Length: 322
Image (cartoon, rainbow, N blue to C red; front, side, top):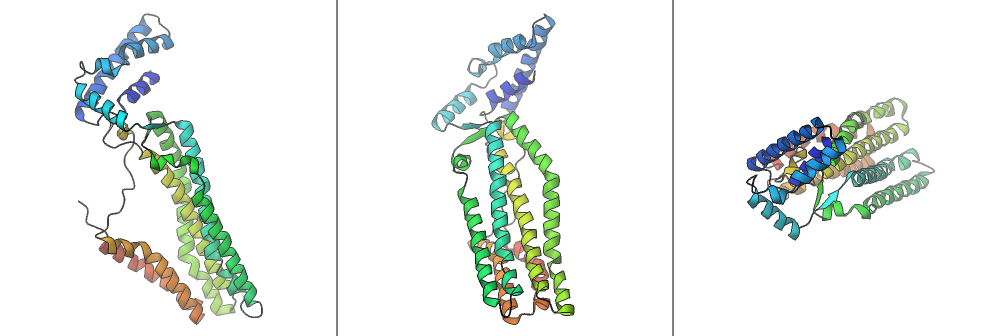
């Protein structure tokens, strides 16, 4: 019976998601179920019953008039002939999710090296200062290389964003199950990442007591690893949404899953620019002030202040909901 339901969903996938279409789908499913149960009661095998039901009710063109869907079927056929959709099956979904996981890991590790690179000159202040600077640039080069590599790989999956694609119900259910199983991992990564970023200033308390360069260096390592966990988990989570949002929300296939992660709307271009550069500007100010003053035990206060101000900035930048 599950085969019949999946076949029915494939039949109606491209039709508009209207009350009339949903009613017709429900009526046709009931007729198919009745016929299937009748054949089973007659002693037919399951495969025979399924084949008979599909051959009798599996042509939507022939059933359109009886279901009062002639207009919808004709419009859908015309639309799909002009703009054909590529079907993304379960194997495609598995491959894309694996690619997205690897890409997220490369980018996350690259960002970690860029952030943690600052620890090199801090640890080598004095006689070996130039060595620390050289190591910093080496780490930055490695980090940028990983980020670029992560951005360039995956040419086989460009069609996901450049072509019209559609997921069948079985693939949607597979992706939703993968997302559900990843949710505890994502929650843990996000929690640890945020905690590391929040407590990154703690090593600076040691800076006052022992005067060691290790304390401010550890701060950047804390931040880098915290950001690594956040970027990785967010990238993997985003890949699920990318697949689940392929189906047109105005069609029956768009009802397989709820729409998530609606893009943030800003009041204007200036507001969008401010929101985009807010954290990079805060990071730049922190590094500039810290290196000019070398008061790592004090400059950490920039982060909690920036966090408090961020909410106010975003409230003023975001457009009001319709």
